[in-house]
Image 1 (tube, rainbow, N blue to C red):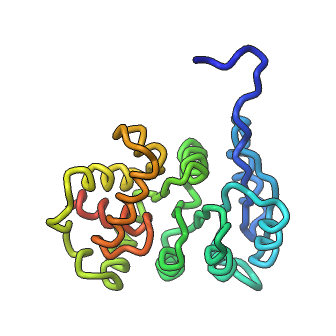
Image 2: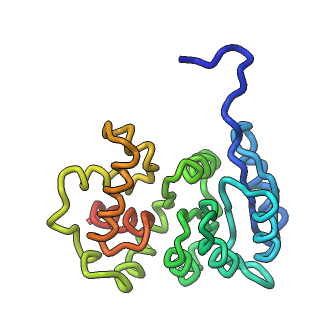
Length: 223
């Protein structure tokens, strides 16, 4: 059913954007806010300013560069991701920062985006993060997989044989970046049931979080 004429639409996704390059921030802000469904509520040029902005504005999503002067983005995200009420965060990166990205994966960052992502992909990524999904630019998946496999449990070497049909279905949707709510809708399940499946999958895969699980599943698919 369409909303009644004049009825307010959903509230825009509120974003804190952190990068030490003002021109890049301006470009990203313009791209994100074009459709009116996303609003950049604060910007930061270093990690300290990022933490302060998150504390003041309580955004739905954080987008942060990992290399910034002073307290860098990675140090700030390490503090942020350890908080129980932390908003979902995505790293804005380039191809030459594998070490930073691997550490961001370890601390629980939910998304990895290249700075040259297409505008539509960037907007979709922010919406997916706000909905609880994982966001992985396919161009960096192959670069992250060796790092993940080197530091994870044995199941990383191949898809576990004891996954049930339903677990495989959930894993496939998780690998596509879908949120628990979206997976529940696709499979006709309660969201609480999906959460239980995801928790069981993390144990079976030896993954710390849904992003690691998605990376592993994408690697198996590519193989």
